[in-house]
Amino acid sequence: MNILIIEPYFAGSHKAWAQGYQRHSKHRVEILSLSGHHWKWRMHGGAVTLARKFLTDRLKPDIIVATDMLDVSTFLALTRSQTASIPIYLYFHENQITYPRTTYDKDVKKDRDHHYGWINFVSALSANRVYFNSRFHLETFYKALPTFLNQFPDKKEKGQIEELEKKSKVLLLGMDFTPFLASFPPSVVSDNSPLILWNHRWEYDKGPEVFFRVLWQLKTQHYSFRLAVLGESYSQQPPVFAQAQKLFKQEIIHWGYIESEAEYAKLLFEADVLPVTSLQDFFGMSVVEAMYANCIPLVPTGKVYEEHIPPPERKLLIYKDENDLLEKLKQYLTRPEDFRKLYPQNWVGRYDWKILAPVYDEELAS
Image 1 (tube, rainbow, N blue to C red):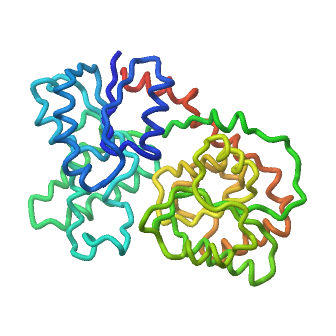
Image 2: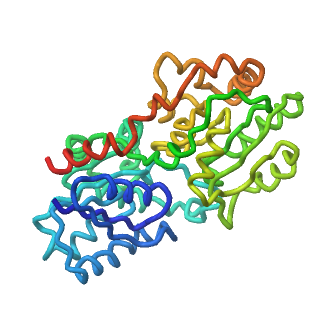
């Protein structure tokens, strides 16, 4: 079977997901993509460019899998002579209805950013099936959809929601853990101070202000720790990062993005604890990567991360608010033996492409 993945924003987790499935599927998987820049323009104009490329390349897939960054209705309209009989499935990595907005976004201030959520809605209507990368993502999307549609003046089409739900299901995000297998360290307890990890994008939605504020309280209360701040940074980033680099210069062992997958995995295995302060995640790939390296996650309640943690361990690892996170970090720093009996890798190994690729193959072929 020939499967075509259409990805207007070919970067980060979107790129890793597409290439991972391509490598592990028993089917022939092609990728039609655009570079991962200018996400708003990709949602507006990407379908036009990709439709042209689709027709020019004379692609003839049996199935099309598009991601949430594609305006599916526009793509199908422009390629209807070739795609009328081809099933198209929509995969939601994230959605623009429940995604938190930054105050840096001029569209938010001008109250004109609703169109991106509308593209997601109409794309879902246009697709034969709709997949979400987590149960949390599916449930929060459909919980928020009626409120989103209510903001429009009339003909709100809320009756379509039930039909959308009927063709929607969870298809967990596949991940390639190969770099981690080569970096697996011996199980030796280090005499060094515990290493606290940040391995997310340097952006507002990951909650860096809370993260560094809690660490500052630890430092001023004379708790000993080391700090590694990884992840991609951008030209426009929250100013707290520059401030933190100065405040924690004595604790920092690494600062900045790591190109090498092997070096990245190695540092994750060296890390001890991952305080997660993100405002929103639809799956949390960076969190799962750290967990696969047996780094202990401390995660906020009511978020997707609960899906990655078995119920018996949730009381120890899920915090209620900023003060509770501080207390759990103190507990880790003073009584690490309470946490070292846990092996998070056992909880997230189910996301390995070796397990999920056959699930995808069967689901898409059905």
